[in-house]
Amino acid sequence: MFVKLSVVAGLALALMSGVASAETIKVGVTPGPHAQILEKVKEVAAADGLDIEILEFSDYVVPNQALNDGELDANSFQHKPYLDNQIADRKYEIVDVAWTVNFPMGIYSNKVKSIDELPDGATIGIPNDPTNGGRALLILADGGFIKLDAEKGLKVGPTDVTENPKNFNFIELDAAQLPRSLDDTDASAVNTNYALEAGLDPDKDPILKEGAKAPYVNLIAVRTADKDAPWVAKLVNAYHTPEVKAFVEETFKGSVVTAW
Image 1 (cartoon, rainbow, N blue to C red):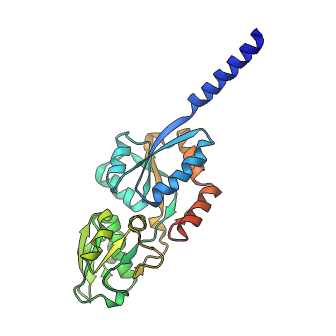
Image 2 (cartoon, rainbow, N blue to C red; image 1 turned 180 degrees about the horizontal axis):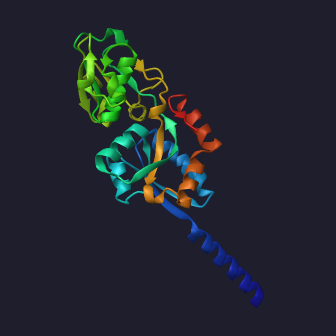
Image 3 (cartoon, rainbow, N blue to C red; image 1 turned 45 degrees about the vertical axis):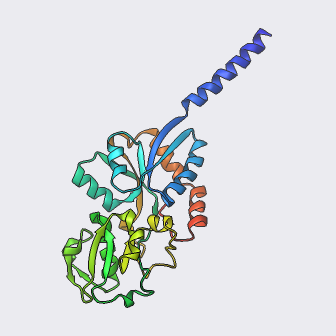
């Protein structure tokens, strides 16, 4: 009997140790697809002993500040140009460790059905952060509606518009507010995550869409000091699985594209 009890006690202790060894990390996301995808990643990562606590943020600024300050272990919401700009401006000690998905940006309108119908002097809302605002302008430039200072590359703003035949008036708004601006603007550039959250269809609703631009692929970021931590590899491996890829393809029907 003593032996049997010892075996049972040993098994119980082993199970308790296994539970205790499961590592918990906090990952910041924006609402919508990033949060939905990470819920699937969480499910996959649990089998590898990694517990993911998901925290949602309503803007693009706070998740990097929270990561740098140690309130998060990682975040998954931004593309490389935005992260690089944040690091340059705010001196964050954070780094990207893996590609995730791409969200092609679109120009939406409640006033017209075609980009060609926008009137002279139309008001167009664009994100007020430099990288996404520039991204919106590049969509219009690629469509032939404006020309931009070629020397600025991706880092363009309204003052870098060199030709504007239809005299578009650009107003800069917080990215999360742009779907709600559509009743007040003639058109607005909306990131796909916010478009989906607002009930817009990124495949059918835009009057002008961005192509699959590699610079705007989203990523997972961590503090520089943590980039080689074992949990980082577990997080990336869980994200880059067939299960997550299938979830993205089945859920978003091409409006969100995997990048691995």
